[in-house]
Amino acid sequence: MSETTAQAIALIIYFVGMIIIGLWAYQRTDDLDDYMLAGRKLPPAVAALSAGASDMSGWLLMGLPGALYAKGLVEFWIAIGLTIGAYLNWMFVAPRLRTYTEVSRNSITVPSFLDNRLRDKSRLLRIVSGLIIFVFFTFYVSSGMVAGGKFFDSSFGMDYHLGMVLVAGIVVLYTLIGGFLAVSWTDLVQALMMVTALVMIPVVAVMEFDGGAGDLFNKAAEVNPLVWSMLTGTTVIAVVSNLAWGLGYFGQPHIIVRFMALRTAADAKAGRRIGIGWMIISVVGTAFVAIVGLGFYAGRGEELADPETVFIALSRVLFHPMISGFLLAAVLAAIMSTISSQLLVTSSALVEDIYKVFSKSSRQLTEKRMVLYGRIAVLATAVIAALLAWDPGSSILELVGFAWAGFGAAFGPIILLSLFWRKLTYQGALAGMIVGAVTVVVWGKYLKGGIFDLYEILPGFLLAGLVAYFVSNATYTENAEIEAEFEEAKRLAADGGSLSDEERKSRSVNR
Image (cartoon, rainbow, N blue to C red; front, side, top):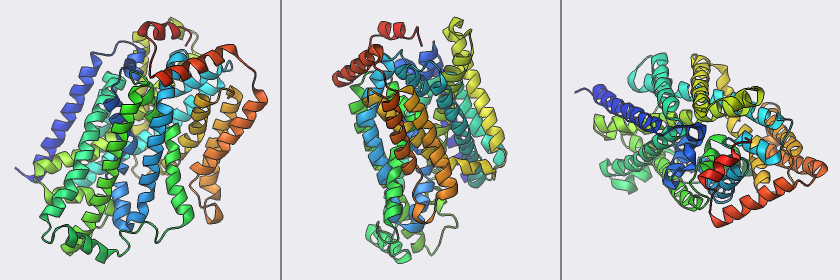
C-alpha cells in the first residue's frame, strides 16, 4: 500500500465519522433551540473542547508552530495572551451569559440577547450586530475553505478547487443536518485529535533522535541561539499587542455561544478546567513541535522551505503512513471545526436576527420551518464563501486579519457591560459597537506603524467601552423589567442554576 493510499484511507475514515455524528445529531434536533443551541443541554466537556477547537483552527497546527520555528519563543506571547483571555472568559462571562440569555426571553444568539437585554425597540442593535456577524464570518468561512484547498494541494497534490469543495461539502453536510449538536460533538472529536497529535509528534521525535532530548535542543539552539528567549528581539509594544489578543475572547460569537448552550451555570466551572487544561497542553505541545522540528531537521542537515509545514513534515517522517494520515486529519479537523462553528453562527444571525426582524410572518412560522430556514442559511453562506474562496490569492483574505480584532472590539466591551453593569442602554451599546469596529479598521489600515504600532484590538476595545459607558450614562432611565432580569440572572449565576424547560419556553414567546 502506497503512502498516499494509506493517508487517503485515514482521511476517508475521518470524513465518514464526521458525517455519522451529523446524522446522529439530526435525530435529536426538533426545533430552533435544538438547531442553534442543542436545547441548552451541552455537557461541560463538549462545550469546552468545542470552544477550543472552533477557536484555534489551523493556526494552532500550522501558523503558531511556523512562527515559533522561524523566530523562537519570542512568538509565544500571543499563546499566553490567548490562554489568559480564555480563562477569564470562562470564569466571568460563561456563568452569567448562560443565565442571562435564558432569563432575557430565552435569547439564542448574541444579537438577540443584546436586543432583549436592553429592550431596543428600534431593533437597530440586533440588525447591526447581525450584519457584522454575517459579513465578518462569511470572510472567515472563506479563509477556512482556502486553507482546506491548500491543505489538499500541498499534502496530496490534489487540485486546489477539488480539495476546497471536498472540505466545504463535508462541513456543510454535517452542519446542515445536525446543527449545533453535530458541530459541538464533531468539535469534541477534532479537539481530541489535535491535542493527541501535538503530544505525540514531539515525544516520538525525541525518541527517534539519536542524541535524545538534550542533543535535539542543542541542535535547535545552534540554528537559532535565541530559540528559548521570550524577550530578546521584541519590544514592549509587541509584547502588549500579543497579550492583547486575549481581549478578543469576550466578543467572539462562535466561542461564547458555547456558554449559552451549557446545561447550567454551574457547568462553567468544569468547562473552564477542561477547556484551559486542553489549551495549555495544546499550546505547549505546539511550542515543542516547533523547537523539536528545528533541532530534528538541523540534525539531518535539512531545512524546511516553509516553516508552517513543520507539523505536517514531522508527521510524515516519524509515523507509518496510516498514522500520519490521521495526524494530517488533525490539521483538517482544526480547519473544519472553525468553519462549521462560523457557518452556524452566521446562519443564526441571518434567521434569528435579520429575517425575524424584517418578516412580519415570522411569528406564525413553525419551529420546523425555522430550522429549515436555518439550514438554507447555512447552505447560502457556504456557497457565498466558496465563491469568494475560489481564487486562492483573493484579496478578501486580507480582511480576515481584522476579524478577530473586529469582533473583540465591537462585541467584547458590550458583552461585559451588558452582563455586569445594569445601566448599559441600547444607545450606548450601539454607539460602542460601531466605534469599536470602526477603530479596528481605521487603526489597522491607516494608523498602524511607528508610535501606533499596536494591535488594533486594544484601542478599539478601550474606545468602545468608554463610548458605551458615557453614552449609556447620558441616556439611562430606570426600567423595572430590566432591573428584575438583571437581578435574576445574577442570582442564578451565583447559585449555578437554570430555568426549567417550561419556564424557558414560556419566555421564548416574546422573543
